[in-house]
Image (cartoon, rainbow, N blue to C red):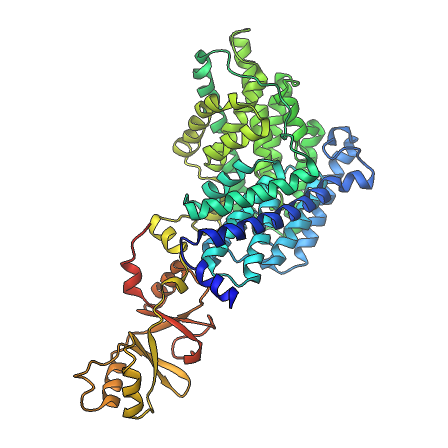
Length: 572
């Protein structure tokens, strides 16, 4: 009974307290899972012996730098080919697709494939990040918690956001960036009922991660800043240049995925590994997560030629890995490319204005902000991420001057969408929620369904029907034996003055069509089902697979939902 009361409360759009408690619990679960993934993916090669540091791919001999990514790509291809096609979909795009089509119900099999495939891809030095796998794994952990408790779909959607925020927070020690990323990129909304549980989830997951990895920021850099506001025009030019790089990244990844999807899976993943290995022969910094490369760029330890080479080869390797289907992240490489491209532009600026501006290392920081903001179409998340990654507040003002030009160039000049949205669109799926859809998505059918209904059997006599009518129901479920054969408004007093039974039969003749929906469904799901069927009513039933007039038992009905009431429902 307590769980039923919880489910009924969570069906409301303003269920702040129970959602906050669940968000806190989801954050703890997500933090534990993400720490486990990091331990496995970052220590596999160290424990196996080839490397003494998970990031030190540069120390590998050239034959290892070529063979390791190829072997990893082949292994991933064989692994994924061994499972059903529906279990191969992984990454943030999969999470967003499930939110759009299945209200955030994420299958555990896909998350298991993401865990294993992502760990192998990272360990074998593919040009990927860990944030893609952790977003998928964290979101699934939170979703499975909601599924296990049989919560309504609107709260499972919020839990997915909690899992996304918690995974980013636990993976990078960036709780604020995790919250903003979840709201700005995945959930596409800013509401109090959404913010509170997501913030608590990010806090809890980050706390779990700090128990293992400590509280230090990801990158240790000096507190650099602009030497003068006169540098802002050059910062804007940096944003424009990095916006072009981001557009090339999004276009290349989407185009390659679109044109290669019909190739055999094993061939695609092996070729992706081979391209990574070939790039690593020239620049071993393209392998793996590349955070040591970012750290070196933020400290100004590379020359111009090295920075340009790493940027271009990292772009080629990452487009190959992302476009050919390796199960790694696409955000981590943005950080690497942004840092090296920004550092290179900083060196150019220092050549143009000797000793007159900020160091090239500071421009590397701005490159990260611009690249992330333009590729994700999430400028606020990019700003918060670099603030927490470097613990340097001096990046915010020039970061704003860099990220908006980069975003405008990528979107308005080159017409590129956010990378995950672009990949979804390439697969034929729209990911856009207008204010009305978001309002319907936040509320479950159980919160607004009409419970004032009564059952009226066609074979009942007039005396029994009069007793039913005396309860003054808003709706009548007309039944034959146990099945609902129609839903109608009760006859008026005048209509049933002579013969209640004939009045009931007359009401049934003009009864609107109905469908059955699950009590876990959101109002948006119910509206979509009504649109597809052309029906005017939805019966909220225990068995969501039931079809109108075919197996809908009266005992299973929990409420009636009228299409006209949904259309008049105000947005909030």
